[in-house]
Image (cartoon, rainbow, N blue to C red; front, side):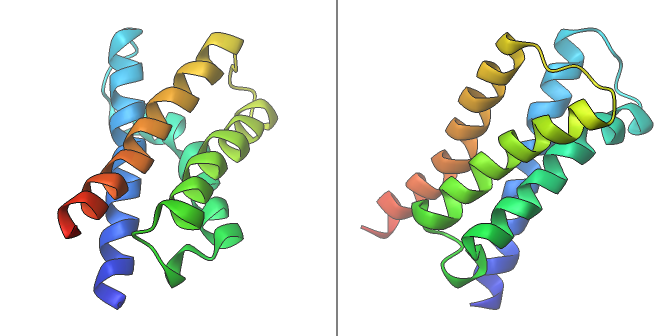
Length: 117
């Protein structure tokens, strides 16, 4: 079970980091480590909050509540933290974050579920 928790946490963090890196690249913000960290921390903190709220460690590979908690935590709390820290949150950006993180955070769990049969 510890292995599944570790795997899920790593994959979730990687999904958030891919979202951040693609977003920064599409806006020509550069790929500096400090810039990536500055953009990623609200979403990673939101992801952690979603994990805690959903108690994702109980069924880390499950779509519900772990996947949905990770997704909505990353987006909702991530956006709140961006506002509090003075970063932007345009409506279109919120929609893109919902779609991308939903696809990725739920998507890998769905693939695991399908593979297991």
